[in-house]
Image (cartoon, rainbow, N blue to C red; front, side, top):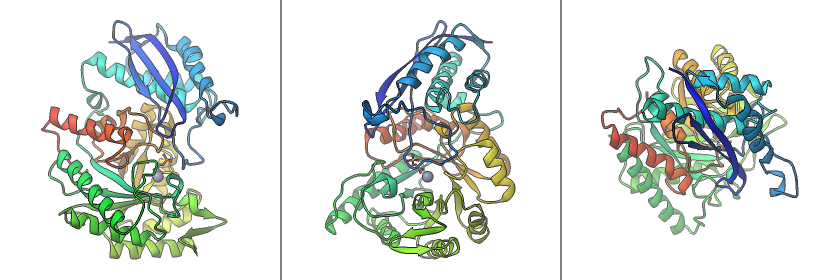
Length: 420
Ligand code: PGA
Ligand code: ZN
């Protein structure tokens, strides 16, 4: 059965960092419109699909998205309106071909991904199934992902001196999604008390984590272990583990990693991670090395890949061709998944398929700039990948995703919880 696109439009709205982004609305003929809010990153990989920004300094400091909005209302609407599609894959192919560039820079990845996300919702609605079920590939079992709560923010996401961008707590051992969310919120509360007690400011970074003036990553890790214990949970894989996203491309310059006043080579960085993994319950490291340090990544994977999940974000940018190359070269064992890095939902699903078939893990992710759109919660559940990171258990645009997971679990109690 095919469906015709009945309406398509976009407007310029704000994201959680007060920057313009798109809200895209799409209806299949005979159905009510559904909408999508487009996310936007700050520590972006250089090979990501390209966001179209107006560049008019007199409006939003150049960050306006009126051209991208115009492309949805103009060229994209003209191409889709009245046209019949069997599924999302067919529609996404039209978007990719119409844009015609490898990086979606002509029409804008922000315009295209908004249309793709709204279309996925519209097809799910047409089939009368929840979005996560529409996104479940044949032969894959849906599951509720482990939430990765980013409770301490640094790097490009906060105004402190902490070089590592994200410190996450992951309740791997929780008996259910709802209990995992409870653990996250209780540990977050204990962490706030510990920080305040030590005289630190408890202001929040872009993803809702605290942004204290602590410079050394190991000091933050020690604090997290205390917060986990104070809240009554067991630190480690059978309880609450820790995941890092240093976002190392941001502190790598001229072949040197600059961490807490030290200058480290790739191999010194790897040994530093090896010691962290010995001392603390760190089970996952994302972007431990920079996106242009593929040789370093290979050595990191050889050194720690058996014991630790090594997730590529900036280095892989959810791009199926790059992920295929990285799988062949054994540079990591997991991929971070962000729909706007590649620009369509179908290509995102393709990247996740490559990960599954290679035995790699995949972690679905928000961006640091978000809207209340909860699409990624359904994406994580539907693909059964077992992992979602979407910030702290605080700030509405982050909590929206966790609350969507809670709702899915309440509606579908048979879904299993946990890592794949
Ligand atoms: P970004 O950060 O959305 O600013 O790119 C998120 C991440 O690095 O995972
Ligand atoms: Zn990252």
